[in-house]
Amino acid sequence: MGCFSSSGRHSISKNDANNTPSQIIHTKEDIKIDASMFVGHRNGQVLEHYKIGSKIGSGAFGCVRIGTHIITGQKRAIKTIQKESISADLTEREKFFSEVDILRKTDHPNIVKLYEFYEDEKYFHIVTEFLQGGELFDYIIKNKMLSERAAAVFMKQILSAVAYCHSNNIVHRDLKPENLLLECETPQPNLKVIDFGTSAIFNSSKHMTKKYGTAYYIAPEVLRKDYDEKCDMWSCGVILYILLSGKPPFYGRTDRDILRMVEKGEYSMKGTIWSTISQGAKQLISRMLDYNPKHRISATEALMDDWLAQNTALDSPVQAIPLSSLDNLKSFRAEQNLQRAVLTFIASQLLHNEDSKQLSEAFRNLDKNGDGKISREELLEVYTGIMGLEAASEEVEKIMQQVDVNDSGYIDYTEFIMATAQREKMINQMNLEAAFKVFDSDESGKICAQELKSLLGEGGSGNETMWIDLIREVDMNGDGEIDINEFKAMMMSLVDSHK
Ligand code: 3AM
Image 1 (cartoon, rainbow, N blue to C red):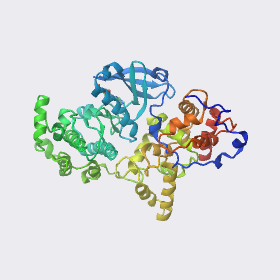
Image 2 (tube, protein in one colour):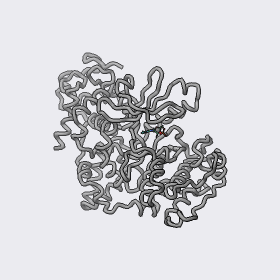
Image 3 (cartoon, protein in one colour):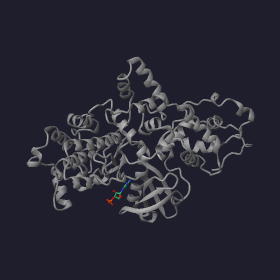
Image 4 (cartoon, helix red, strand yellow):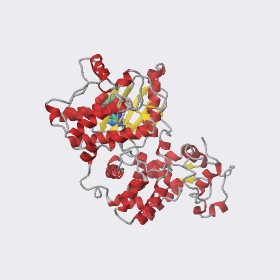
């Protein structure tokens, strides 16, 4: 790419540089900063950035290994696919790229996070977060069946991911316990949906016709090759049935036998196990396993189901949101667009899962309707519990103005983490150096306007002068570029102002 030199057409004179940086202000409407901007922008070989460890699993596509991120020491899952193996097979190739494209667009606490994407001569590598708690499938086998409360907590997380996907026109098409991984091995672990290889962007006015899925979980209309996103809700119904009873609703000795049962859509909730299960749980299952997808419950509706709500209610809702995270949300300030961009990068790519675990819980508790994003109304509900309505409304507007950096009208997951994580955990030498390397994509040791444009340019209207102005905000020595010291000074001022 190459930076413009300080004597080039975009050079900035010393006089310009003497202007106080705060005189040039571009609003966040000019530059919409989004976590997805940082996925895939990597130079070099995967081995330059990761120490490759043991194999976690394999499939027709290739294999998944644990990789240790050299800079941060974080463990991540690296799925490697031999180019040759998918070059001839169009479907496999499509599946592979659709997974990358779709994961890039998602930002949700119950969807596996995509970090990076590498391509070298022989291989593609997809780097995602490493979920060390294993598959929900193994958890069910170990626990035989779950209490209604535990099943409801898992189901709410699955539905939240599904509601988020559907509201973004994404259909998963292969939801099953093997594709639901646990973050860690605690008694009630956080769950994440993986494997978006068969997912697709759907068009609500046009039905899908390709048959994807796994026998036990596939919806009858998928077998008829005429379906919409509600097929995911059928799979959710099967999963809930299994969580509560330990057995699948449609079964048989072979796939063919199972599919015959699915086609009929007949299942039973009678017998000893089911006699101990509440009416509310059974009702939700039958609304998810409604044979007619038009009448079948949607993910948003299911999240409001009484049984689900009662079994996932917090004992003390206000306490469940740590006041410190609310305080941080209120006091979040990053005046410069570049500061917001660097914080978004650190929050989405460098923060350790353990550091954001509590915040992730706080996010879920604030997200009352469980759709994976926080609305003005949800924020207002919390703040009116602490202060008067007028003050609360004012506060919420301020928060939205500062924290909603991609201007979506909601606080997305990464935005919440960015605003509420401890500044010291986010802004430290190691993270700043790692962030600088990504912004300085040509590795010249300086960030120039062109590099900012190609990294952040996707979401904004972005005229040429805007990128130069962004540099100017931070460029202390007036050479038209940002060096590591200027970069660090810009970010460290956020730590100082936060104290
Ligand atoms: O081969 P098995 O079924 O044991 O669970 C996934 C599967 O395991 C695991 O890799 C295998 C092939 O998909 N896997 C996939 N993504 C993962 C992740 N992000 C993962 N394990 C941990 N973290």
